[in-house]
Image 1 (cartoon, one colour):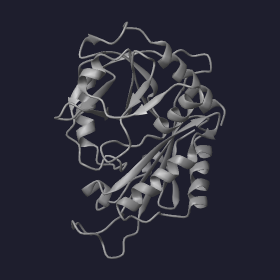
Image 2 (tube, one colour):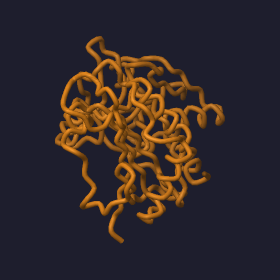
Image 3 (cartoon, helix red, strand yellow):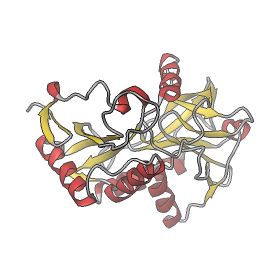
Length: 283
């Protein structure tokens, strides 16, 4: 079945889905996006994703391209047309097409693109597989809490990580504080089995997966501390894992060649993986 993409009111074959050269998302990265899991034909954590989409748009003074119910209908229809029962939905909203000018157009008409793509997710009895990470200087803009399409610093860091054989680049500020990954939130487990992750704020993107995992951990009586930690705490952690809609729960077993903990997937990470995996299958 050929892929179908929703573009500004029309469902188009993927090869014909394109945007205008003066779309401000293309020229200024003037837009936001969301990536949402699909499992067993269900849209996982749809409400918090759309809440975050609305918040990001509000922070940039971009109007929602349509009402919430209509948007949900288009998301569901895009999934159906692409026959995606396991995969993800990509949503992008920009300020729209206008003559190139740094200031906002007087009557902006937001552009909306929604696509769906198949991808295999872990089965209910899957075990997490670990990978390595590298440290990268955090050179991103000061509003990382907005899920902007302007991701060039992330892209460059992720490419360096890929070339080094790592699965993620972990961002470190000049003062030594760890913020997040190139496309994920970072968690460490201390010697007492307590989870630590950076608090919400402009320095990180408040991941939907991050929020769900925090709730799941607390329900399972795993303590969570939202507090910034530094490079030293990261490298001395008993366990490390990163989370996002597409990285799921990914254990980090080494950073820049230095082994983390025992160098194997730890018990807390394994439990968090199982809890989140079950959550995505229970929608």
